[in-house]
Length: 162
Image 1 (cartoon, one colour):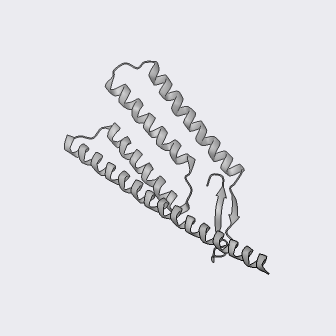
Image 2 (cartoon, rainbow, N blue to C red):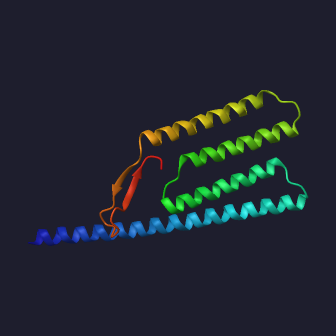
Image 3 (spheres, rainbow, N blue to C red):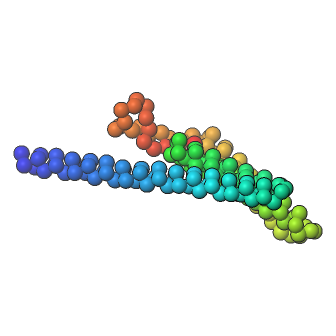
């Protein structure tokens, strides 16, 4: 009888610790998401105001705004789905390298071997997006049901790219 009582108490303590841990982790998760989203929006506004102050907007500036847009979209998708699609990180990297390429060619005159390296890196990132898209279509994510959720069909974790 005492063993059942002790085992029951152990399960309750474990469940309480797990619930408290999940609460703390999820609270930090949402606070960090809001902070990252706010900082991204603030940086985009500051960059836009700087562009207006200059009196003209270049292609570099437009690509910078696209980087902020993609970062904001990443935060939004992560907030809604709890998943970070790798593709968005690759899109940001491609946009950043394209911005660097345009800036380098337009400001530094004749192209050198660095342009070839940048275009090769962009091609490599584009191919990696193709691989990720193919892999996620060929091997879709496995959904693990959440036994504690009151919502029927809720999942606790997904494996793979969404």
